[in-house]
Amino acid sequence: MKKERTETPPETSRGTVHADPAAAAGRPGFSCPVFLGGFMASGKTTVGRLLAEHLGVPFLDTDDLVERRAGLSVAELFARRGEPVFRAFEAEVVKELLPLRNVVVALGGGVPTNRELRSLLLERGFLAMLSVSASTALFRAGSSQSRPLLDPERAEALLASRAEAYASGHVTVDTEERTPSEVATVLLHLLEEKGICEKNALSGRERETCRKTVSGAHDGEPARVFVGEGLLSRLSELVPTLPSEGPFVVSDHLVGPLFGDRVRPLRGLHLLPRGEEAKTLDQVRSLYDALAEAGIDRGDCIAALGGGTVGDAAGFAAATWLRGVSFLQCPTTLLAMVDSSLGGKVGVNLSQGKNLVGAFYPPVATVMDVATLRTLPDEDFRQGLAEVVKYGVGEDQGFLGELSEKREAISRRDPETLVRLVRKCALLKTAVVAEDEKETSGVRARLNLGHTVGHALEGASEYAWRHGDAVAAGLVVALEMGQRRGTCSTAFAETVAELLRFFGLPDRPDRSWEELLPFLARDKKFRRGVPLLVLPREKGTCTLEECSLEELRRAYETVSGGRGSVASS
Image (cartoon, rainbow, N blue to C red; front, side):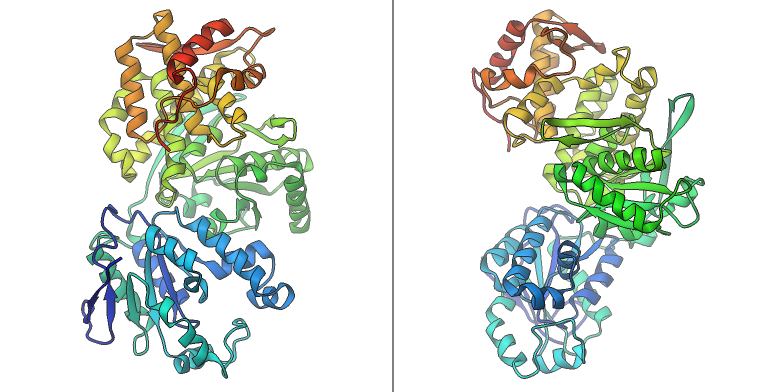
């Protein structure tokens, strides 16, 4: 990538800034992570916190994330397991951060020396290098024992060996004679210049907070669902029944560091692995150990802070610890907000299948802070959009029209639009759940529109197909069935498929019918081998109807073209 130099940074004449004017091309807003690199004691962590606070976004430090995963400090990790193990942890963490949006990350000093990581950082993020001399770094570090590679006798040589790597950022800011606040100000101006963030961005404290309330019912009691921006810092206000010590928060290794500090007071924090690995009996057992160590009793509350897997595992632990303690849902993904956090289902997986062990255990409240969606990777955000479109097709086609009308605002994650979208989905789902909370009447099966084929795609691909993508493809198959049965028109089906494509979702499956069959047979809606399929009805709510496997096969192969291909990746 061609580099250009700007010798005078905005509002200052000290030092040199090396800038790449094309670095932010094609990046609307703050759609990529901002990484701060440089030598030890160059001020990455201090400057990063200041910059993140001004931008109103989360701050992460890769050394901190490595320590949380390894269960050891950086110095201990070097001493006990060696630098190669530390570097492996570090690379894993950096790669996990690359898809995030609206986040500032301080990198370990050695990260830019890894050519693969440096290339990824330059391609997928905005990399700002903070420069410092070896003598200044040693002076700033003092007698700190937390930097195992900062040896006074070889600091100069180490810095020289990394000179090429440290000169490779999109911008370089000299920190020698600047305070951390001054460095953060220079960086803010540079980010505005490059279009990484909007000019005059408000700080997190200045962002207006809004709140909406959704009412449903569980066993005759109102379900409290709060949707808004900036709600995580207001849990005790929104949920007065929380203990004065705050909830015991269960999160994962990334979401915990991102948003855990917004929950205050805090009774304790336990981090699970990310993804389905969190939903195992072994992980729940480790959570039980943490609850026992923290002395959690029936007067306490367990809060799930994360996506659907965290909510499922934490909810199952809450349902079974001391035969049930108070449970609070704080979903941080769009998919969890519009689907898994609502309805009271919790559980874990076994080797024989997903969600085979679980319970119906509604939370005391569900607090949905749409500010957490700002950091969500695009691929994760679109998984939730599939469920959102499903509500529009199956429950409220007026809402489907709103989704089409507001598609641009949804894609750029406009906060007010997201509040209305999430609130509407919550209203739609809680209304269905209120009719059939324990799945005894069949009403709740309506929420599985697109899921029969979707779940089979997930299983047949060994979960290479993610849930939202699979539901989108399954929804198109259900629409094909609807056309064949006369419940919806071709024009209606194409309108939905076009909206799915706009949101980057697949509109066709890529597995053969034969591959799906074993997984279709396990669908919980099948009765004595006969499929019961949720079908859309144009100008009405969807219905559960019996169909033959042959009829479903014909519809599936029409959509897939015999075998099919994923329309978008």
